[in-house]
Length: 116
Length: 112
Image (tube, rainbow over all chains, first blue to last red; front, top):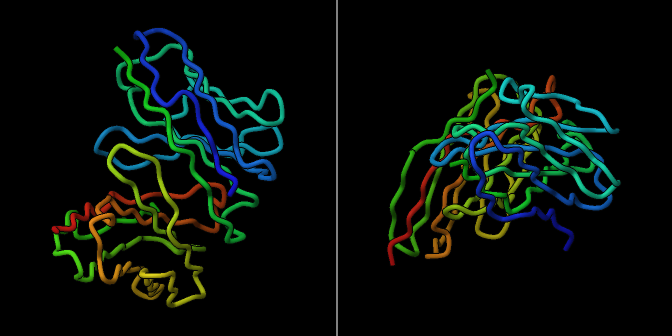
């Protein structure tokens, strides 16, 4: 069964460093998402991406964040200068069509980011 | 805001019993989904129910949706130790079709 994969599973970085979290969505999916979950809190939407551009982003997704689909298979989230409060589990998701058409989003296993 | 909130926040039951978790939300939705998350792990999609559906079954799972009350319930029958996890409802709306909004979750513990 096709699945969303994410690498690395755990990333430890120093405050102020740049990190890139990688995702490989399901191959025929067209819509891509990043969510995050701070330990013990809700899963929060960050950004959605379609047709090589951002469809929607939350207020969390500020100028420190960027997304890219560099090669038609990978989907990346870059945090330019990490802060302590960026420590969280980051989930990538993909869907074939927007949720309004009843297709669900398939989530990857997550990358745990720890900022020291 | 369009938001799912589950209750109870935590539920502990004996193996073999049924577990019922509830979710309430604020605005009109296109669909509602339930996810499971084992501690520190990823999100597993359990079931999606459309706004024009009232009930849906999948194995030991039964989901109901009452759009007039803006609420949903997830019933797990004949619970097993492996069902121990957090369960989240997530809503998809008409105006923001590209994202889903998660509730706070119910932590379910199954006692052997």
